Image 1 (cartoon, rainbow, N blue to C red):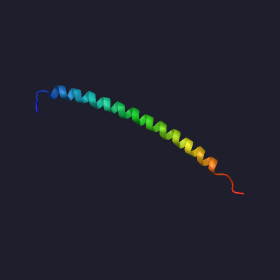
Image 2: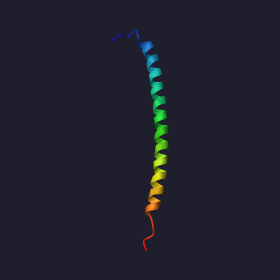
Image 3: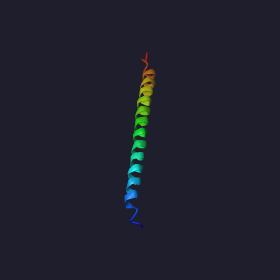
Image 4: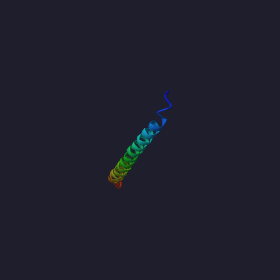
Amino acid sequence: MATTNAPAASGGSDAAIASMEAAFDRAIEKSAKITEITTEKKTELDATKQRPQN
């Protein structure tokens, strides 16, 4: 392995890590929104199932 490319490689690695962090942040945001929506819908569905038994 060439050690002379270490500074360039670390700069590339930093950019790659930043890109991955941004992608994970977007994925986490989307996941949170999906969880919020599905929880809301499940609550609505559960509420419709809870009818009084006469």
